[in-house]
Image (tube, rainbow, N blue to C red; front, side):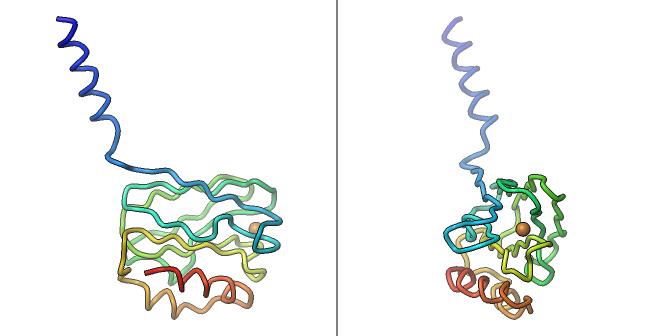
Amino acid sequence: MKMKLIALALAGALAATPALAKDYTVQMKNQGAAGMMVFEPAFVKAMPGDTIHFVPTDTSHNAETIAGMLPDGVEHTIGGMNKEMTLKVDKPGLYGIKCKPHYTMGMVALVQVGKGPSANLATAKAAKLPGLAAKRMAPLLAQAK
Ligand SMILES: [Cu+2]
């Protein structure tokens, strides 16, 4: 009787845990290793089903997806100022992220979902980003597959 209950409890616990789904945290900071106004880390490799949390470590930042840098069919996500933005990624591909107030200062991040090759790699590379955003996005795209 007791063994059966334990077995049932174990089965329940296993069913409640999605296989290997992970959570990642990206900080929004005024000052980071790469300079001023940064997402840290700026490049995240995730798998479908994972969740990325963009957290406002410092104030006056937000996180939102970049037009032209999303897998086909994925809706834009726009986080509020000084709010955490939660991005649940189900579709493989590249997801460009920006902080709206500091976009021209190069506050961008890139999420690769899946092992690649990403279907939208060429499209993401062709996206026109302003000034420092393009400069900081280039090495992130170079890491992406
Ligand atoms: Cu910002």
